[in-house]
Amino acid sequence: MTQTIGEILPVAARRFGDKTALLFERRAFTFRELDALSSRVANGLVNRGVQPGDRVTLYGPNCWEWLVSYYGIGKTGAVVNPINVMLTPEEVRYVVEDSGARVVVASSDKGGPLLDMKGSANLSDVLLWGETVPDGVASFDDFVRRGSPNYDVVPREPGDLAAICYTSGTTGHPKGAMLSHRSVIGAGVGTALMAARGPHDRLINALPLAHVYGSCVFNASLMAGSTLIMVSRFNEVTILRAIAEHGATLMDGVPTAYYYLLAHPDFEKYDLSSLTRCWVGGQTLPAAKSVEFTERTGCPVHEVWGMTELAGATSANPVIGPNKPGTIGIPYPGNVMRVVDIGDATKELSRGERGELMFRGPLVMMGYYGNEEGTKEAIEPDGWLHTGDIATMDDDGFFTIVDRKKDMILTAGFNVYPAEIERVLCMHPAVALAVVGARADEVKGELAKAYVLIKPGAEATREALICFCREHMAAYKVPRAIQFVEKYQ
Image 1 (cartoon, rainbow, N blue to C red):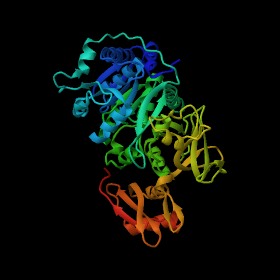
Image 2 (image 1 turned 30 degrees about the horizontal axis):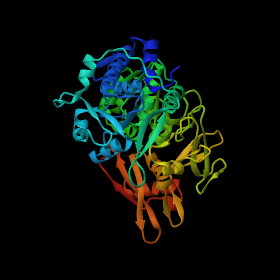
Image 3 (image 1 turned 135 degrees about the horizontal axis):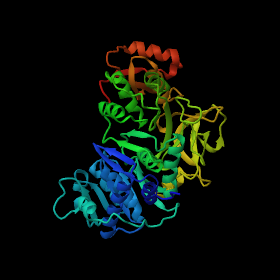
Image 4 (image 1 turned 180 degrees about the vertical axis):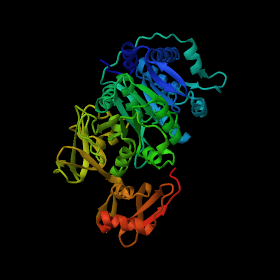
């Protein structure tokens, strides 16, 4: 049984051997090859002084080098610190210093600017992959070329620290969520279980590997014996072509990906018949868009939910069981969720009532690294985690996210939730995507303003969209301003 990150590839290699595990930019890797490559990386890291418990920052775009580095770090017993490639240099430096990283493993374009940090704080080495590695810098290619393909995984306990993943806060610096091997493995196993992933699946994925949703997907894929079709970054045509070319059976993505796919003028020209189910997470996908995707492809969309503090996806609409578009389903096995009063976390609300979503179980983080105060604010003494999401639970035990607590708009004393307005706007046949925010108002405090992207070839006026909203929601919730945009960045 796989209990730690370092054991994932050795176990998968024994089970699935020469079956294709990864397809990336016309290159195929078997499970056995990925295991050997990650062992070469592990040997190289140990030779550079990495020891169990050391923090190793992993910084780069989606690529096979990133993936084998992740598992190589895990094999050494070190703690992986994956960084979002969109962070600014200032943010990256903060994370490297705050986490106490001993080594940075990165693509040459991302890690190069960090070379001057060597010798400062706890950082002793920077390892780079790519074609332009400066002279005198540790080269990933050398590790892969010279390192031994054999490595005995350093034993770790399921409760040991496996990863530190930084998440943006509402104020101040980002916080490092400490995730145990138990939580990382549990999130991956739960993802495989709830989506019925297996060796028969070919999974298309453009999610950033450094994101916890991405880690759930690639860990689940490798543990289940699926073939991971990895895309460096999302592009509508790239995704549509890859599905058709490789006969992908499953796709994971964020709502924006589905918006852009559905709005693409050539959507109907691609053969998507191989898809049997899709997953969407990261934000709420309006039920209307989920239904539209299913009507146009014949493939159901299963919504999932999760957090960095929970090692990724942690609830879902199961493939084996009811699928309720617009809900985030039920918690992964072994975990529980409940809805409580926003002002009193001990008061559980009745079904249908809106309150804060709380989560408890083995997926909950160990705490925020070096931040006891933040940890105490996030986790109750009895283990319940504050998610900050406003939710309801229906009679079947399925949860629906209404909005983020901090995003709530207060209009003349009424609580208005942007996600609710976004769902209604996306029901309009001309709307491809809608995002709602608050606008200050002298009389009512705040009013809702919507930013709307119209589908190619469609038309809609501000007045028409406001009238549409009035038909589907109370007057105080209707956006008072609508701004059309050509493209969301």
